[in-house]
Length: 352
Image 1: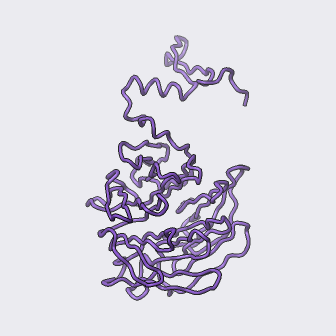
Image 2: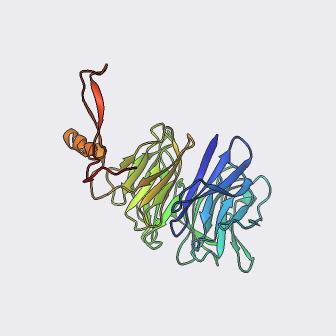
Image 3: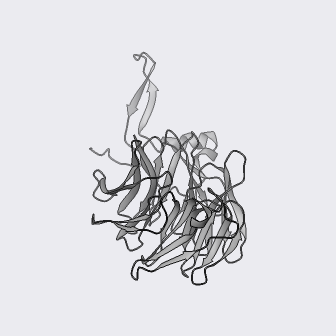
């Protein structure tokens, strides 16, 4: 079976990229879809697979960086040969990979390994120089002191998240400051680098709360709680944060940054592994554990979510979304039949 792991749109929004585990092997493939031309996916590359394979797209749209355990593969989007960035010993699990705004620097941090390997490496793709940050004080074995999220700020500083909290790194000084202590999962940066939205784990059942942290004031506020998956995405304008669930409901939740009830996108049969928002903010991509990949239109956040509407308003709304009606039919064994009519809003029925 197929196992989608990570999703990303290219900066122009034309392509959707995913890392895919095929079967139960130790190899993942990087797939790409042309959303304008349509058609099936094509494979860009095959890479070594671990359970935490991550990807990041070059903001210039020339390559995608994929973590492969103890290294990073740079996969050109034009189908050219890959380039490997090395420096971690065998047996290391990289927790995240990120590309800076100029597409020049690639950074990776360690999820799992001995204390001495838990450093952040930054590769300069032009000079081929490598900068090493850390390790932090008190780092331990396994996932203790692990990095599960990374992001470059417009200033060139680096943000990391992990078991020991959310940190900002001064790259030149090799110095970090804890912005918010406690477990912190993968995150998304928005508001021109001022804000971070992330899931912080607080419950015994491994669920967490969706939090927004102001990197200038260090203040944090909770937007939502009981989140079952730390993966989040934010729309480019910073109006909505999209989170997903590994629970059986398979829900994609679109929550206003200001807080309130989320819009629920339901359709996955099981939990959801990954989510991404298109650069224009119009589309949400989600990857389900059952092997499906879905594209959703961004809901209108100025209107209340469907599940909050009173019954009569909900039924009226649902009727505007379909041209099918159940009508009485005495000749049917059930007493009903489905009647197909013009779609609401169309003066004439289109011919397919």
